[in-house]
Image (cartoon, rainbow, N blue to C red; front, side, top):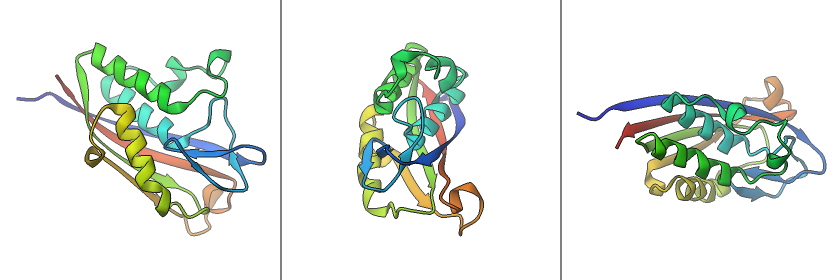
Length: 160
């Protein structure tokens, strides 16, 4: 019998002027980007936390602290590759990931296939094992008012 584990990840970043908007490793043309120590890729950060949580390996703050200058402007997909290596070192593999981006604007539907492919490639799995969705919050809360974006992710991992 397979040993499956599930983890949940959540991340949030404030929108700000003068930054590129990167989601799932895709540059989304927009008037604002997400503020953060790395590239502030809220989607990839949620996926990493879901994987780390499923493996019982802490969170991204433990592995990539925002106080470490080595991670300033870091490409979150590269950090995701490192997380997947940690899983492998612990005898674990990614089975599938399901993620949701919460953002009032911009519309993200046309960018989702690229996000899905980038995440799958970074995790060394097929695109069919990754699902990415986007939703608004009908103008409610900080995401609905356009102050920031958030993402949730659920990951299923298994012992190799």
